[in-house]
Image (cartoon, rainbow, N blue to C red; front, top):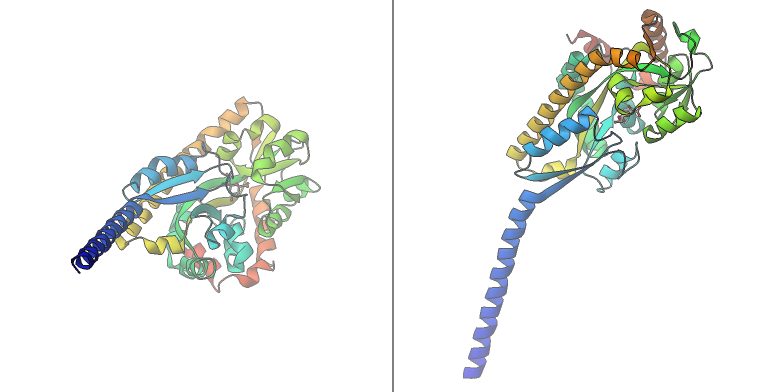
Amino acid sequence: MSFAIHRRAIHRRAVLAAAAGAAGLLALGASALAQTVTLRLSAPATPTDQRAVALTEVFGPAIKGFATFEPHWNATLFKQGTELEAIARGNLDMSITSAQELATLIPAWSIFTAGYLLRDADHQKKVFQSDAMDGLKKMAEDKLGVKLLTVMYLGRRQLNLRTEKEVKTPADLAGVKLRMPATEAWLFLGSALGANPLPVAFTELYTALQTGAIDGQENPLPTDKDSKFYEVTKQIVLTSHLVDQNYLAISKKVWDKFTPDQQKALLKAADDAAEVGRQRQLKLETDLEQFFKDQGLKVYTPDVDAFRKKVQADYLTSKFAKDWPAGIVDKINAIK
Ligand code: KDO
């Protein structure tokens, strides 16, 4: 009997100890989790791209108290264009996505793939923060499980060619093999510019230019510098055909696990990083014209009105326009 009592007592003590241990572990686990939620981001951007630098220097440190930012640049974790699917499947927490990628899954998003729509970096930011975006942001959350934290300014996209012939109007691009990122909306933009668009991944772009597989590409000046495209091209034509934007995206499931205060901090960290990146990109855009000239490239402005007229007309009559939210072009234009 006493033995039985003793055994029961030992058993109870053991169970209590185990429970206490488990509770301790749970408590530890919870606090450890709270402090070490790892946010893995994958993007094709290089680590020296100003968006990458701003996220590493501003976003990561700002959320350090409750999350660890773990970026993977140069598309080392997921190939360009596969990140949204990876987030939807729960294999990735964050990415820097584009309207073109969102549009492959939600056609209404193609509104922001249209050339000569957004006027500049400030207009882009105001449009993202306006209620014109509410429906589109909600679609991304409901259909893809992706929350867009902020808009990141990539810059005005310019033509960058390895050919020498001067380009004044879209007609001068006839037959020019122009690399575009590999989505339908990007390829449409290439045709609207008058060129013959070819899909090539960003990570393969330098080699494609070097080998002559393509005649040119289009990206903002800071990207041309950062990825050294000037080494393998001869001219930059300042068409400014797209005020390009990327969105800092996070899995909605991951987002929902954070407390309201942490969510507020995440949004602020994202906006602060985007602002730092935006200002640096804008400064680079101003400074770099001379850099490229010094590298021996021709840099000049074509007949931008001719490009604008053709590109806008092509978009308004395109199949994409049928999916745009009613009245959104007027709403975007009215944002000052
Ligand atoms: C590109 O592939 O040309 C592009 O500029 C498209 C953007 O939307 C974005 O994906 C960007 O590449 C990458 O972030 C690399 O800078």
